[in-house]
Image 1 (cartoon, rainbow, N blue to C red):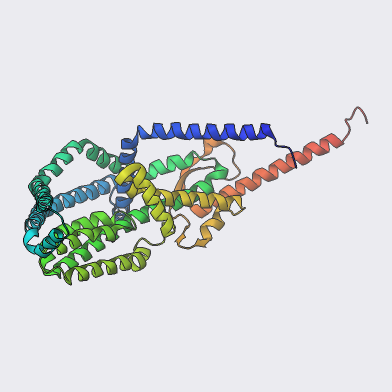
Image 2: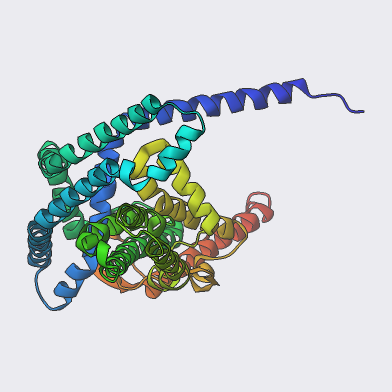
Length: 435
């Protein structure tokens, strides 16, 4: 039996303690900037969402500044119009819902008289039953009385967070306007030999995050519309169709569990209305069908296979994100983990000896990394010139850029080999004085 290397064990324990201390300190420091990080992430998400529209206008020979302004003004006008049109209706349906809850609680003694008599036969005192009913009435009254103030509360919160909303809009505007310039500046900081890998990571992350955001919003719109249709075709729920659709849209932005959360409000309303059965079973069955359609048909085709996470991994990321950062953590956990997975898997393939071109060409279900499109601005030197002052600004395709980098690397390797050969031959040949 070999002896234990206590020195090595001590060093490992010290490293583990140091890593834990650094991680804890970094986490505590990061917690001080959660609000700023959330603002930045939201700004980047909006920029990812609106950049394709700006690029479409730019290709129509409209200046990018004007294209960005047109898109943002149009989006803000559309959001304002929707809030104006939907706000009053949603508030009115919210008041109706609270009134329905209160009426249901008040009618419990009449609806469930047989149940109350059964409780009396079981030996439960009438005073205890009355206390429970009075408590339910009080809670229902508080809920019903607070509903008319919900619109005012929403406006108050909007005013309180106006500065943050303004910062998100301004930052996303500049990210959309100067995103390519910022991206080129960051890519330009990478050494030439690492440039293919940097372009690979940038392309993969852009596709994952951009496709995820756009696809998730599209899914939210579809699920919201399907929820509204379910309510419309079940008459007692028809007057609450709008508020159920809006809640379904908001819940669907949370991955994996959106349709399940969206089903809560319609099912509760169906239970509160007269003749609950079999209507409630029909509503529940409709939402089971929506969940299956969203998970197996719409999700893979709309979001594409951009995320590349197994559903179990996505659910775990959702739970951990919600536990650590609440609602924002639940919203951002899946795309962040997916982006990290892209980076880690690409690094792993590079460590196995695959070149960036091989990784770009290789298809891996359920997501595919494609070769970046477009042209890159670089400083080009004339052929056979080594003087940087002669370099001029120009554009080059990705494939030409990779080829130029490979050729330059090969030329440098050949030059180093020639220098080594010359130095070796000079060492072998004796000086003239010795001859």
